[in-house]
Image 1 (cartoon, rainbow, N blue to C red):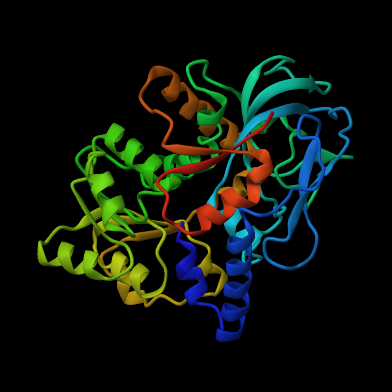
Image 2 (cartoon, rainbow, N blue to C red):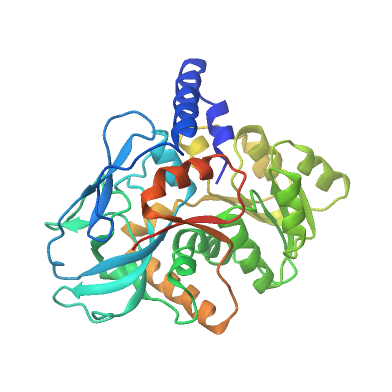
Length: 373
């Protein structure tokens, strides 16, 4: 996804100043904060205390037995996504019909199963894509990074034995986004040229692996020189700056057109990216900001017969069959060794605020992981 600096730049001056002041305050106190007395070995979740950005705290909770068709999981690890930064910042545009909760990617152990569940049993090590704790037949809102939770069976798959819990928690959102975007929507083919924006993040590094596995010729962008050098070591042909239109100028001057673009950029940079597509090229857009703002595109951009598709991975919860089959396909490729977990940094669950603040700076490579006791 886009980094936080791009989102902040598009706020009104008043909102930008308010948000930056809050973010600076949170950053200055992150090392001094004392977590409320919560037993992190028993069940807990994080809850927002107000509408203020980053104002969330842990609290103890009780969880009822899973309902029919549901699985109860005790988390061992959960990874952060950029959407978690946006939710923590109070800037996230909600997906229609999907609860807005921090913490969607989990790896853990099945505690109990509800009536009718046949794919997993207590004691199984699993991966789950989690939209929120299921209680009384509904998915509960304001349920963030809960340790023990009930989730629909379709959101759960067995964890490959050759992958740790921390590494497995890095798989669901980023690999599903890249896999569905590049393979199921764009149908990326061997030798085709693909441009992956913001490629040093979770989705980007997943997409690089998938494109390399597919045999494509990979081009990428990233926000720093250090990240661009890292990408070149991952098999990327050329890596450009994601924060200026220089990538488009360089590719156009070299007459290098793209067959597929996995896009996280917005505004002018998105428009310049579309111009790089060859006839019948496919543009997969995964950033929500311009969609939410109803950003307008000139129809002349489509003169080469290109296709434009917006992918919001949150909407998979409204298509559980696609979610489950896609996750099963991915995990089988991990078991075969075609894919490996991406780089990640681990934080204890008590340091969630520190982890999210670190993620918001955009200086990391890969993913941040919360580890439970």
